[in-house]
Length: 447
Ligand code: BGC
Image 1 (tube, rainbow, N blue to C red):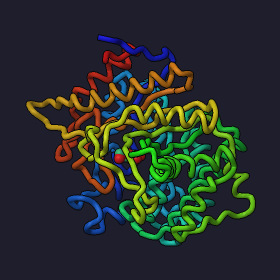
Image 2 (cartoon, protein in one colour; image 1 turned 90 degrees about the horizontal axis):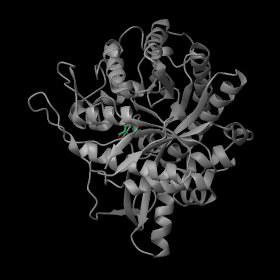
Image 3 (cartoon, rainbow, N blue to C red; image 1 turned 120 degrees about the vertical axis):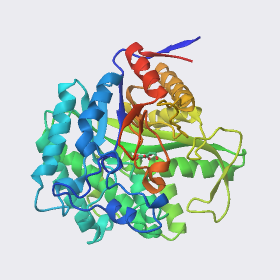
């Protein structure tokens, strides 16, 4: 069987996010987040699921780190729950919240696993939402104070930092499509929020540099790839819009100091105007150290007038799909790397999420998730092709260590290398865990 080798210094690990795994939602002084409110609103999350308990990693983090250690991971990406640190978003600090992350980080470091800390993975303090949320520039200032607290606290212990996870989702899924918290359907609001998220990113990076915090800081961007259904210019432009909405809209401001004009015009045509204040773009355009790439899926797309925000339609062709219904398109992963390199130069990339949702079944104490292993093989092959073509890829983090609260899909959609029994909270290693462990130990995959 052919073997694909990865560079010796490649980092390997897994990723999770606070609201998806921690649980302990009302414990030790944590404030409410918009996801507590949203998930407790009937009809918003499948089966009425919520993150009150989730994987209970708040109490069981030792077990999680044990799993990471046995896996051989050398990086673990987690996010800090802002309302655990500032229950009201600003003002009074919650020492118990900080202590939890110290315990987590210290234990990781003890085990030789580098923590990668994400400041914001969508759980905005509800108290800030009540004052306008990300539509208000006060939230941007609150975020930069929160970021400063975290930077000062964990300086020296944490070497990889991420500001905001997937601003696309936090802006558009949350405020235009309404399927994520806080659940609005207002394009102008989504465009305003998207600018404030990018601005919040810039402010946090500025603070990071001013305080001379150790380590490297980056973002985590949703990426996707689209192949045009035909050679018609409308179809090519439709794909361009979708890729650009994911990538250009959020990264051009950082790397080029401007939003892409074609999307500004597009949103205007749809009735929403971009509002940028003097000085914003200088703040946003702070150099960052790496781009975090989150990639799951790609598709074939064509233009269809008056369809959603971008006037696009995805065409069902013969791709396989994961259990969440997303087409599997590993070539798109490779194309995303090339796209980022062409558009933004040789900035290092860190794959901060990649993984598959599968219909996992626990049979005689085992989960034989060959589909997930195949998904990983195909996507790691794309990673290797990109590395060979000269793209600097620092590391690869599988989404996710554990099955967890999959946002509006609740617990029915599993992405973990480790199966979680949500009744008993027992963690059971899947076949993909054993497979990934070998990949990390060997530094190669068999395809
Ligand atoms: C998010 C994760 C999520 C995963 C699968 C990413 O967009 O960052 O929180 O669980 O996709 O949907």
